Length: 407
Image 1 (cartoon, rainbow, N blue to C red):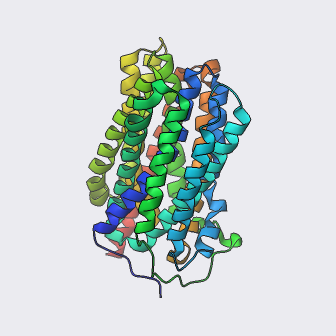
Image 2 (image 1 turned 120 degrees about the vertical axis):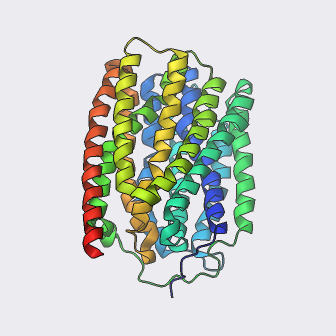
Image 3 (image 1 turned 180 degrees about the horizontal axis):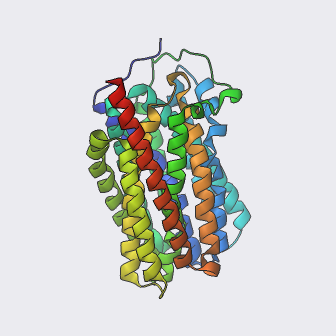
């Protein structure tokens, strides 16, 4: 029998811890590496290639059926993937520390690719644990806790590594991250997680990999996330560029983008969760879409005259808050659509397609920012996010009417 969902708060803190152990690597690849590249004088297209090298993470639907199908029950089906992934983190971070930041782009991109592949495996396993381990009423809270874990990881990467060690160079920062991952490896070994859980149900096949999209609700959520997320994806791609170009040092940019930004983000994730419980995920996504649209318009005007440090810092902090705020409503809806016997596959199928589109948008935005201009791209994103808000409002209205008819 499939294990019944947990309802205790202890599991929520376990989810948060797992998010921290994984996100320290993801946050550094997404934010730290671009900062070091830009500070070393690398052109924007190289930063765009780093985002594209993260494709294994957003394509984790390709690996998720393996995570659902295989695992060592003696370690815990999904726990075994987490143990293996943390070991890979340590090994590849040590290798990355020997790659000079001002050269050998191909080797750096290969290592980034490999690290993100390992992160994809761990993320799929963690998502499956959430689907199987959280009761319906805990899903929005679980998503918020996971976002908080990512925020804490950003603080660790920004303040605990880059800000403290950036003046000493690239290698000390990477080796510090490797040491943090080694501590995470030891901690995961001590957690029981799904040790002793049964794993019944037919193993997922690749022919059913996108079966979650048979649901109209899943298709609606995907379209909404694509449009609402355009502005957030472009902002993600611009972050390192605007901070460095505004005159901030690598250490100060890390402090703003990873520490202060993630504090703003985790605060937003926790603040938005009660509204998800009260009004529903689609209604909250509609409000976020409108906010993102106005945000993009305002900064399109501000950046048309150049970059100033103060307004750039505000831009990054708001971007982080909105990105984190979008997680509890969308992920709580998604968890309710996943089949527990193939939880990793269903969850990853959705977020992989979502991630591919948004990462390509971020990479293209970063690559084109020197040519087209950030203010032009933000103006285009504002329109897309507003369209997403309209779709989200329609979905919220349909869900409310369906609920009333059911009652």
